[in-house]
Amino acid sequence: MARIIENTEGKRKIIKLSSDDIISIVREYQNITYNCQTSTEIRSALEDSVVYVPEEM
Picture (cartoon, rainbow, N blue to C red):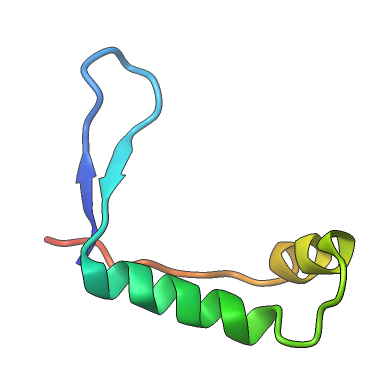
C-alpha cells in the first residue's frame, strides 16, 4: 500500500510505493498503452485514463 509522507517545506507530498504498488502501476500502464505506437498516442491514452494507488491508513 502507498503511504503519503508530508513534506515539511509545504511543497509537493512524497508518496512511498511498495513493490506491489509499482507492479500494479506498470501492469495498468501496459494495459492502457497496449495498442499505442507513438508517444503522442501514449500520452493521449494516459490522459483519458485514471490510475488509482491505494493509500495506507
